[in-house]
Image (cartoon, rainbow, N blue to C red; front, top):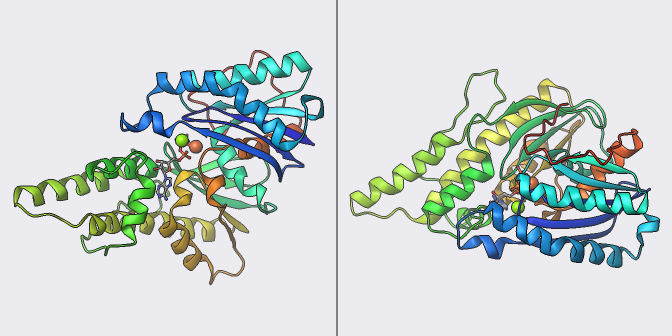
Length: 334
Ligand code: ATP
Ligand code: MG
Ligand code: FE
């Protein structure tokens, strides 16, 4: 099958063409980061406007690079949620318009299912599996017994990992999005600060990052009052060490408890070098569990991952009609 994927949930206008669920024929991403940077975060109204301007251009470019026409497309997979409602609507309406005009089947995809299925673009999925989803809006451990079945066994109770990264970066006056900057700095410093780790209840796979974020802000503030400066590298290293420690420990524990065959890393924070290294170290001695880490370009938002997830849903018979609507609070488990 040849699936066209469309993703506009946040600040990337993305369209991709994927063959047989794993072969990327094209994967075009128009990022709006430059437009949002000066506001220190994504401005929903600006995001929607950019999507409107970009969607047709990006769609045509994706078809051109894939060397296909709409006649070759078996189905259109589009992110229906979660995300910014105004941003989602542009992708959903574009998908509906093209599907209706050309009589192409339509499939709605959950954005986080897309992040998880980015892994399907590099390898076959082996069930049962566990996915650590770490992104700008989500931090979750997702158990999958089979294709299309998602059970959230743990999630953040406050900030998402990416959100914590971006807020700490802001405290250090680093540009948005701050995750990659903290990651880079962390490798130049030492985790000397001994920041807290929120383990929560011993049997919980939930996460919490707001206390850690406050601890960083307090450390910076207190040092300032004493007329001292904490080296930003050490602060970044300490913060990153704390985040990764909890993420990796809980993932390893859950993988063992649930007896999974594979662990898939997913989401924008999956681009983090420290996290990738520590997961590799943790899982290399566990020979019965395969750790899969997508390349950087498939970690952050893209439409190839939406097409990959859409391929499975399409093959399972899932179809949307023209009543398909953007759903900013869409549930992964339903
Ligand atoms: P969601 O997927 O939850 O809807 P989103 O789509 O906005 O949110 P993604 O695009 O998946 O989020 O990821 C963006 C996040 O990833 C940002 O918070 C960014 O700072 C973070 N990020 C990107 N690269 C790195 C890195 N190397 N280290 C840490 N964080 C990173
Ligand atoms: Mg983004
Ligand atoms: Fe995302």
